[in-house]
Amino acid sequence: MKKVVVTGGSGRLGPSVIKEFLDHGYDVINADNKYPKEALCKTIITDLTNLGEVYGVLAGADAVIHLAAIPVANSHPNEVTFRNNVMSTYNILEAAGNLGIKKAVISSSEASYGICNTKHNLTPQYVPMDEEHPQLPEDSYGLSKIANEETANMIHRRTGMQVVSMRLGNVISPEMYDKFPSFIKKPELRKKLLWSYIDARDAATAYRLAIETDGLGSVVLNIAADETSMDIESKQLMETSFPSVKDFREDLSGFDTLLSNKKAKELLNWQPIHRWRDYVK
Image (cartoon, rainbow, N blue to C red; front, side):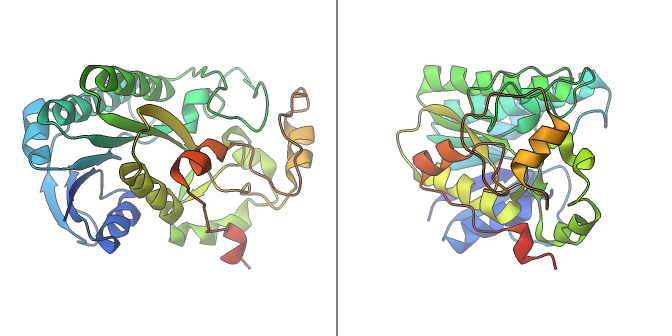
């Protein structure tokens, strides 16, 4: 049985990731600064900004899934968000690499592209946005994610550890589908997300597959559903909300996602299966 440490397992995405690994026969440890609402596995209270504590919690692990972070911009002073997110990720990867752990997955974000938190009306340069789209954040949260992706590259170069950086769309846990009727016909409410979302259970499957897939090196992957979170077709969303964007890299039909997930599908043999329309009447 392989041992996996999941950091931030007490948060929104954590329970789905822990369940995914438990359901596939892994021994799982949750490393967090708080206990979860439901105890699915052993939790070790850990300050991830303390490198010594990180070494302690990762000892004996075969892989690490790093979910823990200040999860949004502007909830804390900018320097607090940047310091916490960058140092915790650095410590996780530094300790894992030196301990001989071969695989890690870290949580990046669509916020690294800059549109989510723009103050200057930044627009996509093209859609669907893939992993090659420029990252132009104006906030410390998005910047912290870029720094973390570069830390992943550095650790891979130095140790050979495989590190997959997941650029997550808006994570939706199952109970959150109750909120969808309040916005599915109001594009302005989710415009800066490019209306993206990913069901926590589908994200969890991607994290597991990233551990079980070999030969990835250090790679970034967008993790998004196949469709937008809106009950308005994607072409119409772009025409009304981003009329200046003329570079369409694919023919959009129906409710197609505007945050490309093709690379994750190809490299991980992954397919999101949870659609909001199956849960919202």
